[in-house]
Image (cartoon, rainbow, N blue to C red; front, side, top):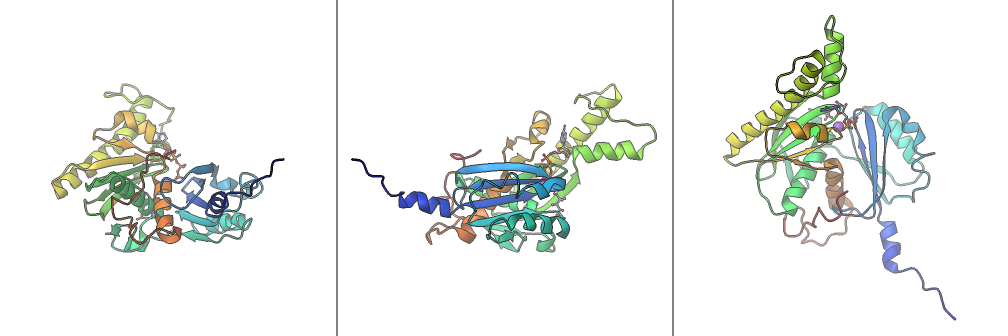
Length: 292
Ligand SMILES: Nc1ncnc2c1ncn2[C@@H]1O[C@H](COP(=O)(O)OP(=O)(O)OP(=O)(O)O)[C@@H](O)[C@H]1O
Ligand SMILES: CC(C)(CO)[C@@H](O)C(=O)NCCC(=O)O
Ligand SMILES: [K+]
């Protein structure tokens, strides 16, 4: 006769430690459920909704999820959207923590004039970028590019100080601005060409070169400042569209905001031993192993 073994304490523990990470952007909400609150944790489920469809989450995508132990999010939208997300989160009794950029967190120092006025998405993505560099033992200056509804390009020095960054319109906003701000311009999608010879190509190439050129400029600024070649990490849903047209060496990385949220979660919720400082490259877990 066989007996059913009790559930391994390990399995029970893992279920109890889940983290729901939220990236509420300008256009869409992205969510990811992790097995544990630290970089490299296994991804259990993930999804995305346009902000106008937030109301469907509790009854839809989230309905079958096991209640997360923690909820940690980055949100750039206003109080109205935040309230609507929090309403959906009432499905579980895990209170949400929204990241507010501070003077310093997870090994990153905030050089913004008013640290809390920095976009949380920018702050969290930079923390994710820093953690990636440290995990592979690289103490180098870093340019962080996020290509989405808006584009941001940040400069971080080798010591982990955010020096400053730029905000520019995303490709979509640039083209819509041209369409609405000119007399006779319409913007069907074109190709990126070195020397565009029709309107569609001229517009598409213009937007792409504006972003690539802005990254080049920040990369030059940071190299001049630090006397060292920066690493450039690019993320965001449209990153792959920019990739063929970049003029600086770069790496395309998926989900820097989620990497950052996991890094912050380790500090806030992780039962890490005292020696596991996220600022120490030796003790950071390898980020690549479980990367999506
Ligand atoms: N060819 C292109 N080159 C660069 N960017 C592009 C291109 N086509 C579209 N985009 C941009 O990509 C954006 C979509 O990227 P992404 O999926 O990261 O945005 P999002 O999730 O809607 O943004 P957010 O995180 O702010 O909500 C569009 O808004 C547009 O600005
Ligand atoms: C710049 C955006 C729109 C990029 O998503 C966001 O980070 C934001 O609203 N930031 C606040 C302003 C700032 O970062 O200075
Ligand atoms: K964004």
